[in-house]
Amino acid sequence: MAQSETLDKAVLDVFVKWLQSKKSEGTARHRKTHVNKFRQWLVAQDRPSLLSASSLDVEDHFEAIRETHPDTTATSRLSAISTFYTWLMDEDTPERLSREGIDGIEQPTSNPAKGLLSNYEDIDFGSKKSKIYDRDIIALKRDEASELVDRENVPEPKTRNQLLLKLLLQTGIRAEEARRIKLSDITTPEEATKESERRRIRIDSVKNKPRRTVFYQPSLDEILSRWVNKLRKVYAPAKESPYLFVSNRSEQLSYTALRETVYQAAENAGIQEKMYVDASGNPRWKVSPHTLRHTMARFAVTGDERIDISRLARLMGHFDKEGNPNIETTQKYLSFCEQDLKNASSACIPNI
Image 1 (cartoon, rainbow, N blue to C red):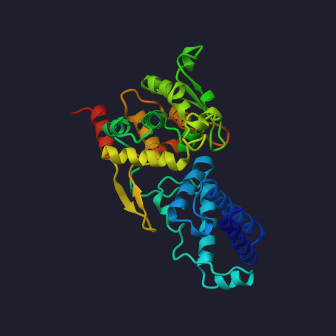
Image 2 (cartoon, rainbow, N blue to C red):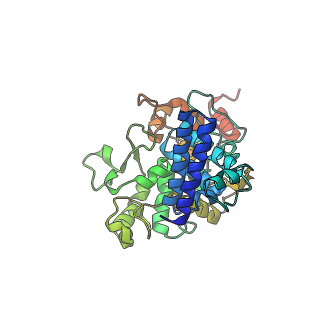
Image 3 (cartoon, one colour):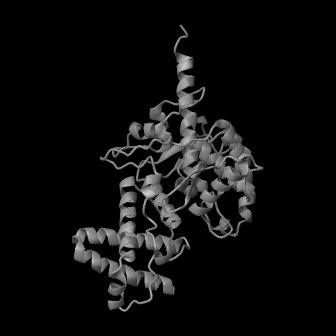
């Protein structure tokens, strides 16, 4: 075990002892579990140690948890992480650590988890009413989406990354779901035994919901075939990997690499924009992986051939505890800008 990992665990143990003296046994246990899972994620992702993590590390972890767990779990994780760093910054903490034989820890000057929730307008707190901000949910216009996936704007490796971007836009799947697609989940036109199976991808939900099916467009046939049957095989991990998207270093594309692909393509396309700076001084960008999910949903309800919201809920993986389409969640994703409303009223209301 690396020295930094050993130190992280030792400091975490002191934190838990402090928790146990202040909180109930259940609260202390839950917060310990949450912070320890964050520590393990940092190690698995080859990130800085728990004592050196930045606000971007916390944000990436928070987004990864949102892809695989309910928002209530993600926000509980964030709360526990924030409590840990608040404790670490406390003026009495060095003395507490010293009593346990831990000296020389450099205390952080700011809490990397502080203010993160204010960056999210679509947090679902379950029984609690969601907090809605004035900012619109961001989605790309059609010409912006076309620019994003233009091969000239896609970063290397172009075939893999262009396939990834187009797939995110065409299916509206979550970033974590895209990472988890296996070759066996895809039914190409050549493999289909009936029309309903053509261009089908089976998605294993990352939020403990029913498995669902999404469909890609014919425009992906050639690039998907080229990637799967030729270029993917060049990557060393591909031989042992069941996943569609691999890298030179891993049999499964990392979330960080996926996010950076979206960021770089948007920058190259000239459509990236700094929306604001968060409480930790980090920029928040207009085009992110979740922007593409919003974009698919907006296309679905504003296009010439529109999808009814119940079917859209199924495509996007919005289900309630009983496995039925959760239309309320889908509606939350689909805030309309003023131009959408103007176009709709112009089309439907008689000019009398």
